Length: 199
Ligand code: ADP
Image (cartoon, rainbow, N blue to C red; front, side, top):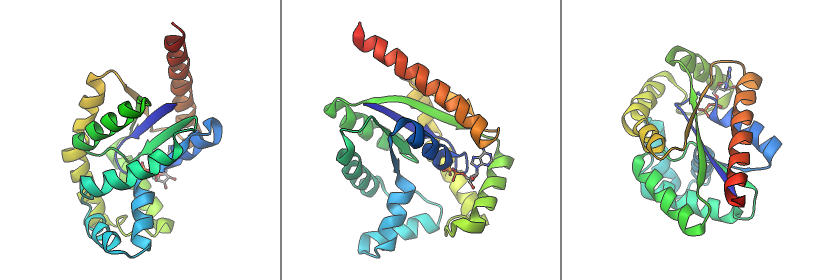
């Protein structure tokens, strides 16, 4: 199995590019945002709790996210690969993910970090808000999401860099151009991991 984490700030294009990867590589897309928003739709006690965090631009507590994401991930162990989109978001989540996947013998193969300038991120999220209907795509919540990202999620870059899994890709160009960069990285890493498994 070839497992990828798509990493980057809100609006970097993780969701958009995940769909392109799914189309070509037949990987399974695991979006924590979508999983959590689905839970909110079901209007259970957990759903209501999750909504409170999301509507303030804060992270949903690790125990909830880990439980929901792991149960989803473990359903797809026979697929060619998984794409983690929007997860992990804290070093604690990253360590828990590494432990879980290593136990299953399916570790994270690469972490693609989409690099996009702040102004462009705002422009994209404001654009998305027109039809996303997302309650967290409004201005004051967007600002808080960036603060949360810088404080809690950005330290993860060092975590993955120091284990040699981080690949930085510019996400500033058009969607197809960015995808071209991503697919080249995935292909070359897949070939390298095949060579390693032969040796
Ligand atoms: P994320 O999942 O990282 O929060 P999304 O994939 O939802 O980001 O993208 C946010 C918005 O920006 C979407 O409306 C999407 O259409 C747009 N977008 C994504 N990538 C690009 C790009 N390379 N150029 C222009 N707009 C983009």
